[in-house]
Length: 432
Ligand code: LLP
Image (cartoon, rainbow, N blue to C red; front, top):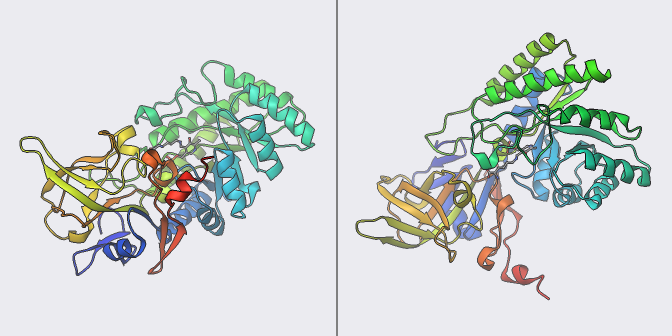
């Protein structure tokens, strides 16, 4: 096993992904290609679903955060696994709906939903709209009246927690574009405004502390603050929230340097703390929802590339260039995210070639990794970047007019295309 059960070596020294030879997959589907071990995704959905039922309560369910990975087949998969979905844009709503996903099981987020977005969500019958601010409540009230519907809503509250993660991916601080802060008193006013609307049905609150978090502490801190807030709201207004959605954020092991995570144990600890805090604040235990994205799909995905140029600059460093890069994985360029990179063609050879892995774009910042060690590749070797299942395909672009790679699902020893490769004609299709 290499990092996660999805990745192994076979007798020819090739990397295998979900039991299939990576070099053969590269030959069959071309490179770059995103591979996704859907059996591993399903196992993770079940782990979450069962642990939620056991430790959070019968009615508590996870909602998969589609921002991590979004295409129709994935919504079909999560529907089969009986979990909910978190959508953050009309495009994600459209994809879920087109896949036949039950829209009642969707939470719709966003700090700036337009009137058109709200109307679209209401027309689709989205289960919960997570209102981000007071303007949005007014717009929602008005549009719901026009459509003569009574939407169920949650309010996005900012608990003010720094989860000690990368700043660009921490969204729970007071100084945030998301939600209304408890510390400034705005959250309480927000609740009163929602309660004053006879049309909006307030089911509870939402918060999100950040992403790629390894400890349970930021989550227990968030629950502590949010349950305290539920108690404060009840004493000020008489309203007691029945649902608490605590967002996403459990981390994923990208490299050997990251800790192994026992998700079930984290959920158990969090559940026990929630029970204890409900007692402390004297509130009934709300229905708990969480929105894991990364921790459901990241480990199950990897990207295969073909190695092109290999060069060493004496006294400086070695570069290997691959046939993809920041358009299919912008995370190193954006966040300096660390990845495990292997020479899939010679995965059992000594990993003693330290290099920078560069993409093919006309931009020097187009790198996938720096200072990684792998078996020295030559032109034509297959290079694998592991743990790319989250925030890669969903963040991909056509920079330099590079077509996006396909998503190939692997399950039970066979492979099938779930999203086809873009063509140059696709890339130019909108040009008038
Ligand atoms: N719910 C809400 C409201 C969120 O804002 C997020 C992530 C999630 C759920 C899912 O969090 P997860 O379980 O995946 O950590 N592009 C960045 C990640 C941005 C995450 C933003 N919000 C990256 O590539 O690391």
